[in-house]
Length: 144
Ligand SMILES: CC(C)(COP(=O)(O)OP(=O)(O)OC[C@H]1O[C@@H](n2cnc3c(N)ncnc32)[C@H](O)[C@@H]1OP(=O)(O)O)[C@@H](O)C(=O)NCCC(=O)NCCS
Image (cartoon, rainbow, N blue to C red; front, top):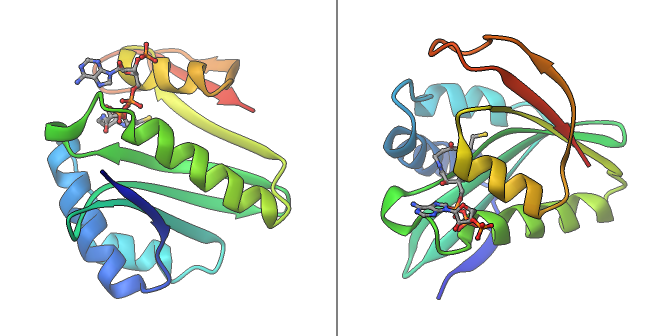
């Protein structure tokens, strides 16, 4: 069973976020980079935690009533268990309470699991950047 929370401790959050990000992406963001992002008051970070360990993160940047998902990732050993969907839903609710009414993101056309998740949470495609990613895949811009 996992719990969901928002971190208000940028140093601890940066270390845990970098560990999760490194397990999910070949070009990972390090703790110093997360710390730099989290020093900006427009960013918000949310985690899923299980048995005292952070296992997933969602990072947002807010501008007035809009929030961009900068990254969403779940440790590979617990992917496909609904944690990513649950975490995104929880974060959206928190940010809605603070006045956010539009959410947007970019996802690779090749990232089938992420696209399933965003579709299930009612994100809709509004534009594409052709061959945006190094593997030649398009970036799909989605909003809700
Ligand atoms: C994309 C990601 C965040 C999804 O989180 P998750 O907790 O695995 O997602 P969920 O369990 O909520 O499921 C999302 C969908 O993908 C499917 N899925 C996700 N991971 C899966 C896996 N390893 N095996 C089979 N299906 C999987 C789920 O079945 C679900 O599909 P459904 O809606 O048809 O049932 C996670 O896989 C991840 O961290 N991937 C690497 C980082 C990444 O690509 N982030 C997104 C960048 S935009």
